[in-house]
Length: 202
Length: 169
Image (cartoon, rainbow over all chains, first blue to last red; front, side, top):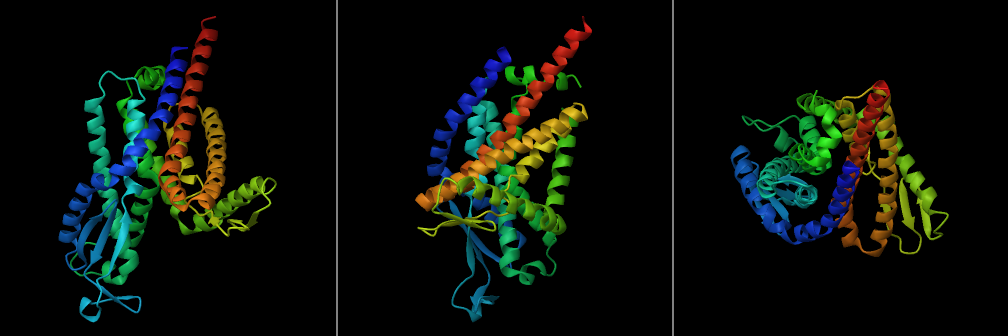
């Protein structure tokens, strides 16, 4: 009965907390993505200096500017074009893991909330940075094609790896990572102890 | 716990990589997605005469707003996560098969609610549609998976307790 009570309480709190958490995140997603955009900008600038010009923040979106221009729909040298080729990336498709994790974390009965929450956030933020990097690389591959993939003396992951990492980081990580971190941190909560007593002994 | 994590990650990455292979996409994922679209249309059409459906597209006849159900909107990734969790957790194969089967149905039922709700939301407000589609529904689908898995763990522990009570006489 105790386990049933914990489960009901958890589910009720999760659904109740999702609304304010997502509400807050909607307004805070821009500033939240800023450090990640800054870090990925440094990484890409050093990794692909001949291809990437800069990664800027534009609200909750990131603008990836390349070292190429565009002429008749094809990437060309900037000298041949009046424009610099760039594209926007939605950082929210990665950062919505944060309100989800927040709702899961605070819906669970625990002794200590803050330290665990900060650790979880740190982990999720690391994944957000990696996800944003994968997102940028996938866009570079799609938009620039051979100009990006066939660079000399620079490591470029194979196209299949780029595609797989992109799909993994967009389709699975933002929802799975919060649930996995929450499950790991809640393994000693009354609900988990009641449910996983058997597994804990194996 | 270590065994759970290793098996979970292995099964997850293997199934996800398999899902991404072109032949699997062509022969399994795309036909399944089309089936989901047809099922969603079959549910909506008797109640709403303004809706038309063709292939994987649902459209409002009056406003012209349409949604196309694509790979990635089919709950397959959520099912893969559920399969990985169930397989990684200690249990017999009969229980696992039952959990995966019922869990798959629960995820797909939720996914059809998702498709239909997004179809009506999009006709009403495109900004809200985008927000709910990209950020809120994936979380609700994952919560569905989490709840199914918790219920499976609960069922396992209840079955264990009953087994123990019977063996103790």
